[in-house]
Length: 139
Image (tube, rainbow, N blue to C red):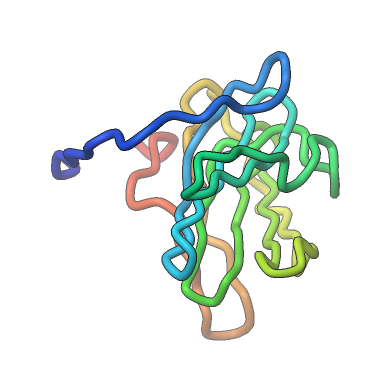
């Protein structure tokens, strides 16, 4: 069982859009900005320390129709996991450019439980990235 995480809520953000359905959050340790994905349409949002929320990547961009998990790594990349199609997108935070797109070959059997990156993606021969320590689909 995962350890309990206790967090203090320092503020709230109003995300633009009529039906956002935010899912997952990733924080850029270098800037403190946070990124959230939309399970509804695949939009990616940037949340700043100044309390601003903005669309960082529009829904549907690069084929993202749903995002069920996001993570920011130490190399300044945003990883977004497709909520219903088994795709993983990797973006450069500084330029918003798509670096890579992986078809993991795995689609969630129960999309309502796909609340994070559920598979491991390979980047190069030796680099392995796991976005989540808990995989609800591998019970």
